[in-house]
Length: 452
Image 1 (cartoon, one colour):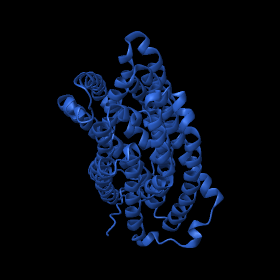
Image 2: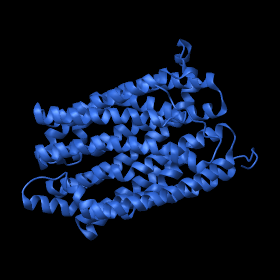
Image 3: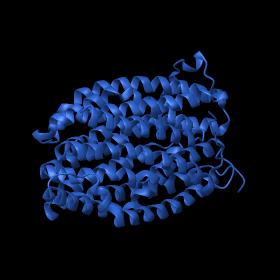
Image 4: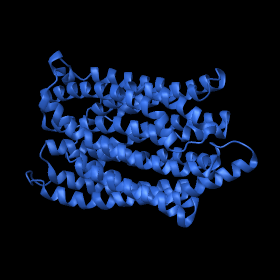
């Protein structure tokens, strides 16, 4: 296997960002594909109650995943900076200590997740008809947190070195594994919701092993025992980068859980419609996440190389590309949204009609607001790439306040549909903080290199 390490400190920024992001987009499409297949199999073969049971776990599951991704992405910022500066020995120590921190964090998350699952679902007013399925689904997924942590760390190591292709290949392998096992475990073995959860974990294991195999083939990352020796200063620096990102994702998820608690009060059909659109949320956000990963690596490598003007130029290019992409995706969803949503929904004709109406109205609002979300990902990731994770964390706090405030107050005026505006309001609030932060922070970076 040939690993495609890429130096992003030379060459056209637009071309670099797009060529780095495209494999990530395709990989994320496959990742979302197996999430979508999970939902389709559960919704079509197990019914509306099972779909609602899985949907009721979304934000709690996302919170744990967000903490995992926050730590690993934070660790990868320092990896990208060391690689951009050419400090390969220090890069190996950074990778080794990131591995130790990831292991300890994942074990702590397993314990916390298992203890919190039932109290949180109860707090969220999860209906009695679905809470049994929800808790079973979470217990299985949370048992596999070390697997999820390992995949995310290995993928972030590769991305920090400019390799977006290997995580793509890993995700393709995982997607086909998950789809096959979903059909086997749910439709053939009749394992129900548990089968969907087990299939997801096995797929994550496949993707993690694939990325690990690729890393072992990188000559300058041949690890020695001393690279795994805990170094207090290095671990502290890694946690300073990773903790704010993990906290940011955590508080965003808490806001989402408050929204879910409001949604849970509107009945099973509303939960099912809300869930169907939330599963498409991942598809809507795919390109945004990919541009974000590209900007973390691009900004980190160029900061390490002292190329500040390239960071500004690349950010402008990424914003233009991201906005154009978001408009195109919104158009597709507005045209084909009802058809796509219908794949997730089963039941009596009346149940299907009501659920589809709820889901498509929510999808319309999300689609029209997509440019706001895409600006958020580009600017936040650029700030994180240059090592500032505190201001993006502040944007996460504002996002939390806007999401929860809208979810709690707007339904009082507009009824249950008011809940659909919580996400766009959260994105807009975060954008306001991030754009101001970007102009302040980037202006202070030293002008140390010649113009391109």
